[in-house]
Image (cartoon, rainbow, N blue to C red):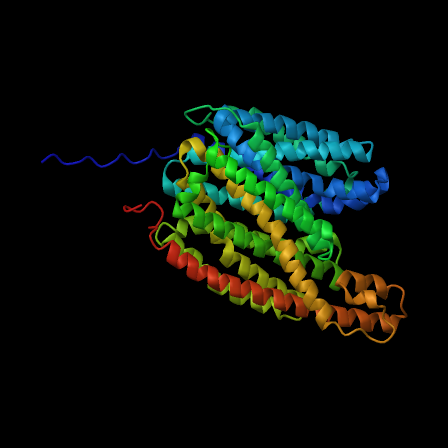
Length: 504
């Protein structure tokens, strides 16, 4: 009998690929910074441009709307025209839009610039992740590279308030946008380090699918944001219903069109679908818990945005460290065991944070919790990218990124609503306090400004206690969800060997 030859091991990446990863890390870091830095710049640009309330909302939200709406389209487009080509086009667009935003002379001009920034960002993220998947064929190297990619995204979230605060102390508000110009210029200059890759068959982009994907994404993101602001708004649920209806039409079309924008066959892979579900679920928790921590620091503790940002760097840096360590640990420990094993102590740490009575203990609990939860992000994305065929790498990357966008938005809306309901039930308003103070911590802080000092102090203390009680309820929900996810992960991923193992 003739022995069957073992398949050749994938070629290991060399110095060129690792330098290429460093190049791809730059836009990732910048996009994450851009997500958070505008919160600090908003008072300054509002004083300069004097936008109306609706314009102010568009300046804040349109960037996220456009990214969420175009991620799937741009991922599929990169598979067809070339991921490096799309990345470079996105870099040009993002750099030009950054300069336009920095020197905007009117609210309308700034909104237009934010739309262009969203379009550029929607091309950069899936193209970068797909290129990493094609540059790093060895499973261990690919997992580590994606861990670095994920760590850069988390690091940008930590650096955003610090960078923004430092720039705003010395320069005008436009400087926070102008950072993008040299970064994108460096990306364009280093483009020869990146290989071109695309799917083996071109295929046309189905414009009807593009329209349906955006018609589904925009109303859902809008509805989730509205629910987070006020759960009683009918427009929020109308948006969610419209998004769900268009989403159904989008999925139905993908099943019948010859060259779908989103290949639903990817979901037949248990590894792909479970990893995607874990990414979505943990982003729900991350979005909700980050929201509560930020509100607590700024409103209950009265810290400045910069000081709050410095506190929030602790859990973000913990996730950076975990994203780098998890792929290394997964070479010896099964990914399912590593992810499930981290969820249990994460649940305990979040409970400690939820029932703490002080900034130090609360932030320590969140930091430990996010450290233990970090293997989900690094390994989950690596599993999603690794489970997809080369011709669908861009689409798979876009799906992973989209799950993050929707997960965070849904976490802010859902856990925010849970915490808000708990606050309203727990708050004990002192005599003389207006009823509006019982709706939220921010309303209580606003009402306290019009009260005598003793009454204001009593109201703020009652509101702070109720808010912490609501945060405790949220962390109980998070702990229960993590316990269920740990069981699901350990069961559904038990077939996966350590990354790079012989039976992979």
